[in-house]
Length: 584
Image (cartoon, rainbow, N blue to C red; front, side):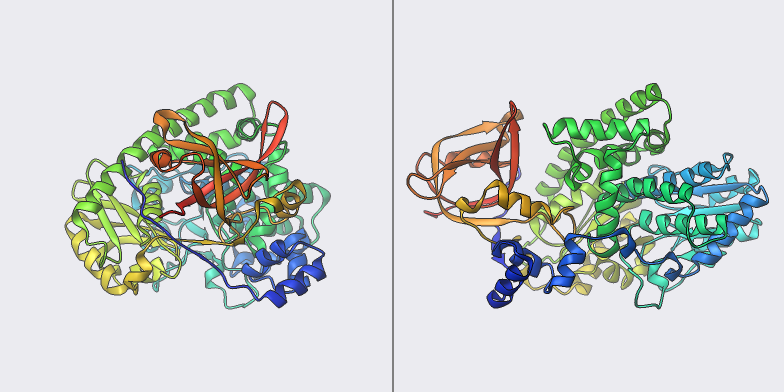
């Protein structure tokens, strides 16, 4: 069993006078004002835009570079009845981007468009020359990439040689050398400071489809038909945005907040199956949250692409028949179960190797590869490794001396920058500051490990796992009114994490209980002071700590409060992130 490292607890410093002023201005509790300040929201107007965003706050799509040129070429292809192919990606962001563009073509009666997703096990991420040749042989005149393409230099050159135009619609940070497609829509390429650069791939696709609707109708103001279509498309925009873990502020927050409502009310059979399954796990709750996307809907869409063929996920989102949707969701659920099992095995193996091979007092990055590791799972495991060892991790699956891997980072370490500094080692790479991927010859993994350790600036003290909580809280402050205030900060995600509170000096009431398969989870009750109410605490994956906790133990908790519904009765419980026995 892997034992998690002890974590350092810390909290952001908040200006108490500013907190009091904001609390009065908004007529909210000091804790809510503190949460807003910790997210950089320091005045009433910023708070209004954050707590009550509007669709009209979305920026004009014309701000994005070459979007007018891209929309013009696509609509010309529609008018001239040219052969079009959309090439996406195998994750949720890529699948929803592909589906969104598919829905537009269906909306305007262009029903003969081809759709292709990469095969993770055969070609890996993004375009490859074999795909370009196949599409050229099929007579494709226009190729539109979504959620990829910004690093496909040789593939786009080949497409041009074969007489095929390429429109790239992407959000990944491009490297120093750029491809030369017909049009390249990517917020990172724009010089205008108004551009929101942190859109997910599906966010950029949403903007492209918005511009396509304008071109198709030859007017900036959309007709009711297209306006309704764009509102319905918010469901896919929210799904891809939340699942891709981009920062949930600015335009991403708007897309996520409004899109969750549209996702919950979707009439598409496949989407409906995913939503119903998520809500069935939520008890009596009748609305969707970002957690439902992150822990239920997203993993199911991701699973087929992680294990090989993402087409099943795309087919589910496109499904128009209820029986077909039922068949497809069973496939997705089965693939997701396999993914969980494989992930647990790789995680245990990776942790054993880290403990045996690494000097954790000095190593600033973890680089590991293995021929037995599934290439579709290493990214998930890398995230867990980062959580446990608090330093960037790059895990690779090796086949025929070629290593394909995924990397995850920590706050303050820009992965894309670090990889760019050693790009000569890679066959190909791409990604963001916090997540990246690449292909490299297996024999060069040692060189990569040395290079990244040289390039990444981390001090030993920063490599201890840390948890930053939002503020201290008395259990007596936890009531339905406070939780209602808290819900105004939803949807939660990257850059707006679900608030984490600390309460010290708690007393354990009664005996703790083990939960789940093999007793891997733990539950117990705590109170803050003699005679006060006791609340249930649930500590997932902390079953091994049951022996530390007995009746009367003095304990401190980091937790996220939530409402639990059981047999039509609501109660507040604490979802524990970390715990400390105060005697220690």
